[in-house]
Length: 264
Length: 269
Image (cartoon, rainbow over all chains, first blue to last red; front, side, top):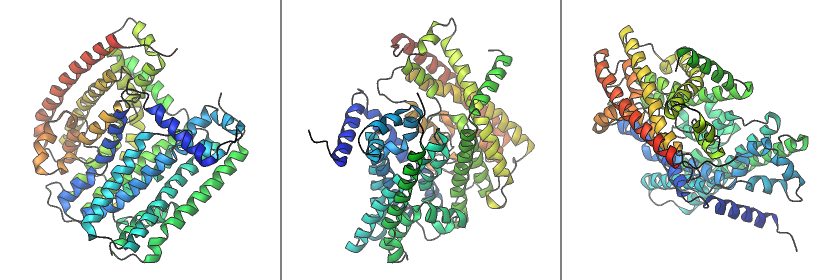
């Protein structure tokens, strides 16, 4: 029998993961939980905007569009790349040894070894916030701007998967999970709640040049809604995200090469 | 439980928290960064927007630092894996065999465990807040009396917070959903305890509800007393709200744990 190619293997893994989830009679409770988390996270900006109306030239809808884009890309990355996100448990249990023994690709096995259906809820809620924000900002978006936003979304997913891969690579050295990388996952989109100009320069620099979060959420929205960003900065999202992911994968394979078994 | 036992448990738990040094520092650094960002959000709104609020910027910033610094006292989100993992792995059978009051022993465990995790992080976050210069500085209490009232309310608030969390423990004694119910309850607790947004900043239509609901007593009301949003004369009101909810939560928690104990299925091995 001919072995499956990497992509159908990935899909097979996801299917098994999803079926495993729905084995629990009350599995849908998790969907509600994630929905709750996603809906209450932007609550603080809703409350603050009800108190302040606007911050500089920013209104609630600017924030919803930018923040929604970042959150949705993060949710999609969590859905598709959950295996890298939960990589510490694979290392600590010794499961990674088994992965290395199998005659199949390293990346596809790691990325797909966990799949959590409920992470889709975050992607969907983020998308809803993004669309609400966009609708109130400028009505119909011209095709070029829409293309720009779609590319930015793809770039965002790449970048966030890249963050997961980087923290997985770090795990080869630390064995334990490194909580500090949360700054670049769940912490990063907290910053999307504010206009970048209001941030201290070092913080803005880190989230533009180190982890390109503002590149894929702020500049594309700013360009599409005519807030002043240039086309060049807006279309940089996908290349930046892809480059980040590529670097992360290099780091991961460097880590995997020096890996010398752990766990029991 | 004797105070000496609590003290020993506290030391053991702080030691456990610090056992893996790198992980300990990374957790603390993350918490500091997170606190900084969330305070920054409030500060940015106050800097760039025009407020229509009775709460001044330094009061809002102080309440936010306190809420963030002590947010582990609130619990919820992923901090109460203890009982849940014991039920899932079957270890809970040991607890059931011991000839002691299950609710009381779980309460004591929770009380110490949360305190041990929260203390280092609260100290770190509040010191950074106090050391920061500029408009994100955590200013001192409104008056010496305000500080005393805040500490009194904080102590009662912590008892309340443990009692409320025991309700999650009771709910978690069955594992049908395959997930920790604390996650859902935890979001409600974090939101309504004022750690995300100080409750005094909510629109006036919500003011009465936000004052009287059970979760406000955990962190938000003590923080309001500290910042002077509530004058020290309001301490009896605050304590009254807290004690009322404490009694209700203890009762509900006991019923749930009792019911869970009758239904529980021991699994694993």
